[in-house]
Amino acid sequence: MGGGRPGWAAPSRIRTRFESAPHPLRPGSDRAPDAGRGGIPHAGRGRSPLVLWGTRDDLPSVTSFRPPSVNAIRRTMVLIAAGLIAVPLPAQQFSFPFSVGEALNYQVRIARLGDVGTGRMWIEGPVVEQGVPAWRMRFEMNAGKGPIRATDRTSSWFDPRRFATLRFEKQERHVLSRSDEHVTIDRSTHRWTDADGGGGALGSEFPLDELSFLYLLRTLPLERDTVIRIDRHFDASRNPTIIRIAGRDTIATPAGIFRTRIIEMEVRDPKRYKGTGTIRIHLDENECHVPVRIESRMPVLGITTLTLTGWSHSPRYPGALPCD
View 1 (tube, rainbow, N blue to C red):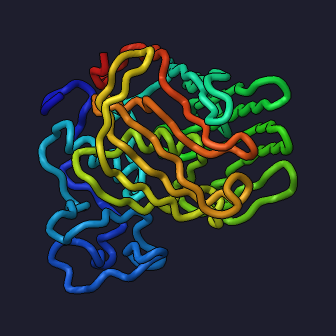
View 2: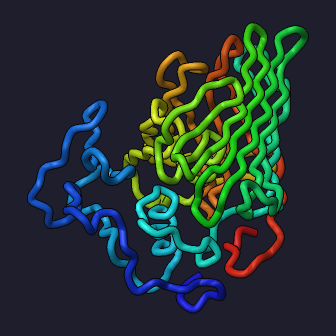
C-alpha cells in the first residue's frame, strides 16, 4: 500500500494546532514538558489532546509528512483521530482499517463461570444523523448462567469525516444494577445532553464515546511501545484516557491464530469502576488491527474476556486496506 494507491491524496502540508505555539515535546524544543496526571507529560492546558511519551528524538513531527506509506498514512490517521488537525479532512482521503459492513463475533468468558455468552461488534449505514452522513457502530453482549446474567447494548452514531461522535446510546443490565444512557452531541452549543437530564460542556471539539474509542485504537501505529494521552471523551470529567502500547502475544482463537499487540486503555468510568479502570485489548498486527481479545471488569461478574470467533470483512471500497 505505497504511493499511488487509489483514493490517497497526500497533503503537502497539514496545519495542526501546534503551529500557534511550540509544542513542549517536539524535537528541538527547549521547553521542558509539563507534568500531567500520574507524571505523564502533557502539552499544556488548551493545547494538544495527545502526547506520545518518549524521548524527544523519538517523537514525530506533526506538521509534515513523507510521501504516503502504510506507516505515514497511519500517522496521519492518528492526527485526525486525536483531533490534532485544525480543519478536519475528508475521511475518504484516508483508508480507515474498518468500514460499513464489518462484523466481529466474540465468545464471552467470565472468570467465575467459564464460557457463558456471545458478543458482536459491527458497523451499519450509512445513515443520516443531525443532517450528517454517519455510520452506526454497534456492540451487543449477552452472558451469564442462571440468575447471574448481564447484557450490554451500545450504539454510536459516528461522523467518519470528523472522526467524532454525534449521538451515543448504551443500555446495561447486570445482576444488581441497570444503566441507560441516551446522549446527544450539540456542536452548535458545544454541549452534550443525556435524556435523564444530565449534560455538560463537551470534553473535546471532536468528541468520542467508549465504543468509538475502540475504533480509534485501530487507527494507531503499533510499531513501537509508547504511551498516548487522549482527551477526546464527550464528558470532560472522563478525560484523559491513557493508552499504553506495550508487548506482543500470539493468540489462538476459533477464527485463527493471530500475532497481536497488547494495548492497555486506562479509562475514567465512575459507574463501572468507581474511579479509574483498565481495559486490556489485543489488536491483530495485520493492517486492520482487529480486536482479537478484549478483557475488562464488569460489576458483580468480575473479569470478562471477549475472544474473536468470526470476522466478516467490509465490502470493498476505494482505498480499502487489504486485510484478507
